[in-house]
Image (cartoon, rainbow, N blue to C red; front, side, top):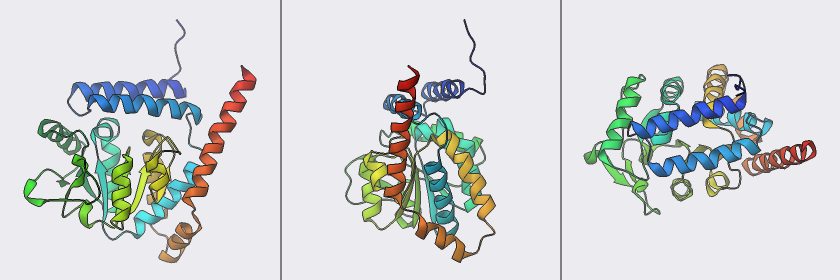
Length: 254
């Protein structure tokens, strides 16, 4: 049997898969989250399992947006808690953002497991667990409408990795800037978000942390210019072209 080198993208994909399975066993991930991961792996393969130019451009715009934020919040679900809890905490500290647990398939045990994992990785304050501080986001019927009135409800910028389209639309209608990670450039989430990073979150979140740190000394004028120059629709079209080019190249090899 031929072993896959650790540096190979396929080896990294297998490691991500193992993290999700472990997260499911530990009560973090819903079974539906495993299905979502499978879909994501397919798109990651089509994207070449690497961070492209369009994703790098979106990461830079996201960093600029987060550094200008007055009340940024990072929304965490089970998949994110299983895949990159340490990075979520690092990003929150870098940009002084709050962390809020928000679940589509919600139950108290899973929420507690996610909170424990985040705290184990260095988080101190985690929103989304106290019913007396909860309120509802209009325009959405799922459990994700329940948000913390001190977090997502009052946030100006919301980072929503692996988000569903309904809540992305609801957040935008509520006047919030939405930054998402989504491997499918044609999804409703990608098309509706303010800034879409079409990349695997396990790669891109580290790059976002580095970019935020690098740009932290930039003046506000430069940050505003980066955001003004970014066109999410145009960037998504470039991601679609990246998929087309990869398919054409692989078809020629075959």
